[in-house]
Every structure is written in C-alpha cells, then in structure tokens.
Amino acid sequence: MNGGRGLAVITGASSGIGAATARRLDEAGYSLLLLARRQTELDQLGLTRAMCRSVDVRDQAAVAQAIDEASKQFGEPKVLVNNAGIMPLAQIVDQTSQEWKDLFDTNCVALLQCSQIVLPGMMARGRGTVVNIGSIAGHSLYNNHTAYCGTKFAVGAISEGLRREAAAAGVRIVLVSPGLVATDLLVTTRSSEIRDSYNAYAESIGGKLDPATVASAILYALEQPPEVCIREIVLAPTRQQG
Ligand code: NDP
Image 1 (cartoon, rainbow, N blue to C red):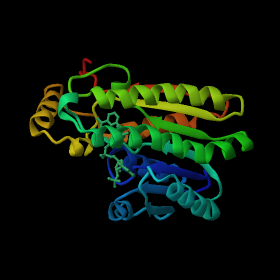
Image 2 (cartoon, helix red, strand yellow):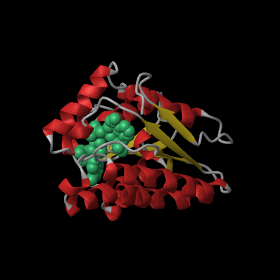
Image 3 (cartoon, protein in one colour):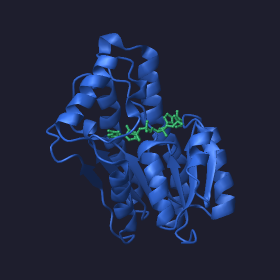
Image 4 (cartoon, rainbow, N blue to C red):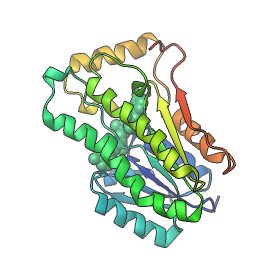
C-alpha cells in the first residue's frame, strides 16, 4: 500500500495497543505520525511511511508542531488515535497528588488537547475520525482502580460530548473500550502485590487480549463508510467477568 489512505496520528505508539495500531494502519495503507516519549521504540517499529517524534503528549505545543510537520509531508490528518495512557493502580490513600495529576493530564487533558489540534481542520473539511481509547474501566469500578476509572469514565463522557459537537460537521468520534490487554500498562503501578494479583486474575481467565485484536477493532471502525459512525466498541477476553 502507498499511504493513499492519508495521515493517521497515533499517540502512545511506542508499545502495546498504540504500536499494534501503528502496524495495522500501516498495513491498511495509512501514512503515520507516531508520538510517544521513547524515540527508540518508535523507530524500532521500522515503518517506512511513518514520522516518529519523541513528544510528551501533555505538551500541546510540541504535539501541534509534530502534526504540522507531518501534515506538510503527508497531508492534513484523516485520523487521530488518542491512545497514550498510564495506569498507576493503588488505593486512593496510598497514591500521591502527582500520580493523580499525571493520570488526569495524560489520560484526559492530553486527549482533549490533541483533539483540539485536529478537530477544527477535520470539521472544516467535513471529514475525519478521532478514536479515543477508553476502557472497560470506564464502565465498571475495580479494586485499586478508583483514580484510573475516574479518568476512563471521563474519557467516555468526553467522547460522547465531542461526538455531539463534531457530528453535524461529518466528523466521527469513536470510543474503543478494551478489557484486559497484554501490554506494559502496569509499569506505573508501584505495588508488586497489585501487579501480581492483576496478572493472576488475567491468567485465571485464560490470559489477556492480544493488542493486535484491539488494533483490528480500531481499523474496523475506520473502514466504515464516512456516513457510518461506530460510536463505541467494548471488547474483552470472553472469560473476563467484570
Ligand atoms: P502501554 O504502557 O504499552 O502503552 C502506553 C503508551 O502510552 C506508550 O506508548 C507510552 O509511551 C505512551 N505514553 C504514556 N504517557 C505518555 C506521555 N506523557 N506522552 C506520550 N506518550 C505517553 O499500555 P497500553 O497499550 O495498554 O495502553 C494504551 C491505552 O490503552 C491506554 O490509554 C490504556 O489506558 C488503554 N487501555 C489498556 C488496557 C490494557 O489492559 N492494557 C485496557 C483498557 C484500556 P512512552 O512511555 O514512550 O511515552
């Protein structure tokens, strides 16, 4: 494929769901702007039609500059995948204000900022899709997930609000809400007991989803004709109960 599908911007593309989505969208013929803090991991994806930029997604000016640069090379963005996120799990009494700030700034504020960069252009052109990665933790509460659930419930509300704001202009907002996925997401959870019990539950139900499965769900939404908006996809391992 030759990049003829246009430019897709993916935040948090250095690992997990974002990296899998980069590979899947590359196969589908998109040109890519891949953003994350770890430049080496982005480069190691080895995608030829991709611009890789080490950017903290919370820095709106830096994200805007990268999108501007990629637009000059590949054309204005057709797709934004707001995927970057962190999940420091703990009881609220054991967390720090810095963890809450990092959580909401990364999972919510950055998603708003990135959306604000691309939406005016998409709405003026009457076409485009923003995919927000929420979570099943935006539907249910789980032990040690209180602050994280707060961010993901917010992503759900923000997605629906954005969808209503953008719908009349012909722009689609898609919420993808996965259950357990096999990624590095627990890296910011300090307690090894919490990490172990989380992974033990996943093991007991036959394992987590492959990130490529989530990438396929994202591509499914993107591949619909422009007049069809898949508003939300919730996908989880079959044996996951909550
Ligand atoms: P990973 O930890 O593998 O990926 C997270 C990505 O976000 C990394 O590429 C990381 O890159 C990036 N990121 C984090 N903070 C920043 C930042 N400040 N600036 C730029 N990039 C940042 O986990 P997942 O793939 O699982 O997570 C992706 C999304 O999926 C998250 O929003 C998560 O909440 C959601 N999700 C995951 C589930 C799961 O079970 N794994 C279930 C439901 C939802 P870098 O560190 O290089 O900056």
